[in-house]
Length: 120
Image (cartoon, rainbow, N blue to C red):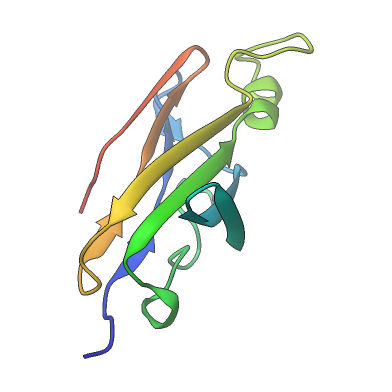
């Protein structure tokens, strides 16, 4: 049976109470110590990617890592300053064990903290 699941994500700026527009996101397939980049996307005005970051035809079980490149966004919106940021890049590693499910992995972002969860 082919996989029908997919992976989506979005970023919410909890400091300003708005979707985070323009954040680059990279998706890696992880196997042991090996990382293979399989997708790159950027958040839109709704804080989401325009399409699933991993659509059904490429979706499979295993380990993944999303890296959210938040530094430029935080600087551009006046939330941080300086050369060295506390949260410049945020990696989230997670596992997918059901190839028919929708996995939604959002990032709730502030300048000095973040949270995530498996959404719907």
